[in-house]
Length: 68
Image 1: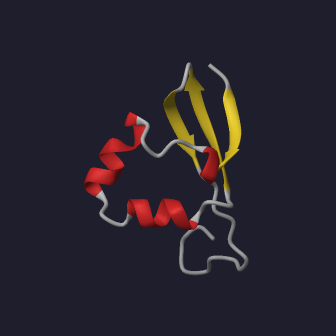
Image 2: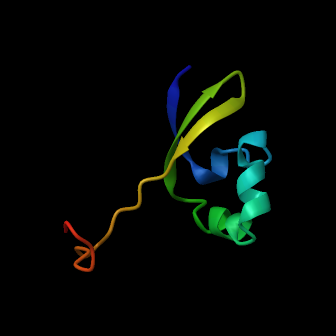
Image 3: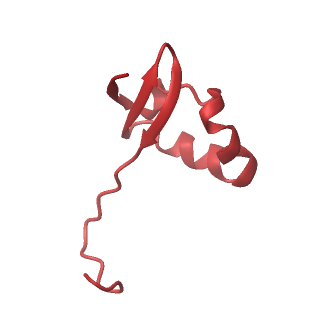
């Protein structure tokens, strides 16, 4: 099963992998659509998604967490 680096817009939001996120978080579809030009890693096989990783990069250091 390969990892793929894809734009959000190229990831099928209708894949069953995302069902629980859509059910549990009412804002998930809106968040996902806002990220359409961002990249994410997916772990998939034969069209079935088994993993999804989005890395958020911060412009400023986060000083309100320990350790920084």
